[in-house]
Length: 215
Ligand code: NAP
Image (tube, rainbow, N blue to C red):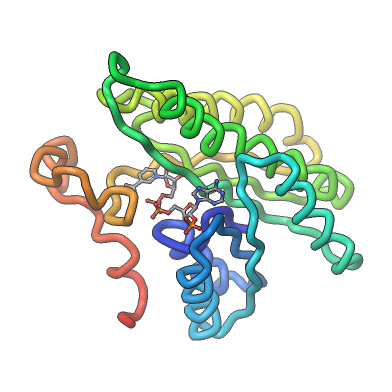
């Protein structure tokens, strides 16, 4: 399962998982058209997948979707979870409203918690699981204008380390990946010339369009 698989990094991960032989469950929140496009790309890559629509920040939606899928697939379980769904709402802390804080924490942090908890039991029972959390450079070094996002991603990094120690012995690993800047919908309003100075290659990663066949 890849959360936020309808666009950007989640789409690229979904298609990549096909080459490793996985049937991919593509989660998305609302963008059905793009989610269907990811499914199409999975098909073009020679794989199979299905869409699972739910809001990762809504505990009830997460549990309902996961329980329904499990009921319909009694012989299977979800052995790989990529917690990728994320949003940012950049603003200086001085001007930050409760909603800027809440929405970013709800999606990036609570989303990790709800989805991981929902899938973990079956990974433990089956003594195999892989959990990969997509975090960010912001959660490591902090970035101005992203106090909310940096806090959420740093929290997921802490949670990754703690959970890895809880369940490693059961052959369920938990890792975090912190990408640098990648061209996706999330970064399209950022000032590239300002940011690329932070990057050794002096450029943003060209993103999914670089990795996938052009439409
Ligand atoms: P993106 O292009 O904006 O795509 C975001 C994805 O997350 C979409 O599939 C979206 O679904 C989904 N999503 C958002 N809120 C959701 C929710 N509440 N429930 C379920 N799905 C939700 O973002 P991206 O750039 O690919 O980023 C993916 C992850 O990488 C994020 O966690 C981000 O923080 C992290 N990251 C990105 C960069 C970068 O430079 N792009 C760098 C470091 C880390 P819909 O299509 O339905 O809206």
